[in-house]
Length: 339
Ligand code: TRP
Image (cartoon, rainbow, N blue to C red):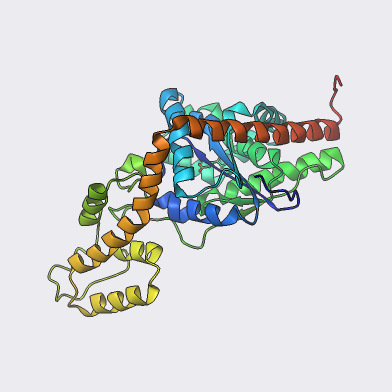
């Protein structure tokens, strides 16, 4: 059953379909989405069109990860009766809105976007940036406004995209002389980015420092065993550091018994607590978190037609909503219509 109330605040968030989801996604957003779906009208966008903006050479990978990510959603507890899961490339109104919005943003502004600047640098694009990549913030503005979402849960690094969205919204509304589109606000999680198991930067599959939501028990054990701790904490009796110590960062993120974690930290700092004991605790916590997700994933994998059905149904619902927004915007701008 779908939410009956049309007055719930609208949330949109999405994931590029470039790889299966991992623990960083779980603490950064998935866990929140499971909670938010009961109090909001939530849409989850499988952003395959956006994924293509830096994956034009790998459309097969972008395709394959659509089902993977949708399966991850369902496995962590996204309920398709509460949340609408939809496929970006099959929502043509979003592409139409993108094209319209392109006229309300300058190339200079796109090039100044801090998110884009960082990403261009990380990918080594230089001047050879695909036009689609430079313009994806405009497409993301279309995603957000297409659903008339007012809340967009994203990582801190994506906040400039919401700002850019709101600039476009204001320009459209000014041109239209009416508030046809609502502004949106970013909902940034309290916990920062989860570092990778190597302690470097954020967790990401391409860096090989991730723990996938689908990780097997032995993979979890191995990842925890390899996890970066305090390189100067050699003997158990040595005093250790907890800052930058990934095992403690993860315990903070995943262990609900905060008092026990604080006690462990105090003992570690004092000296007399070996890495093995702390790692064992973390391993138990992660095994307990991931086992049921993995089991649900396995059950879903046996019935891919169910996942496909969820995407089809959600995309059909999303199509109505985004088509309606496109009609609103066209009418508000006073464009020619044939009906
Ligand atoms: N840019 C987001 C990411 O890389 C994915 C995304 C696409 C998105 N469209 C969106 C997020 C709309 C929020 C709203 O993770």
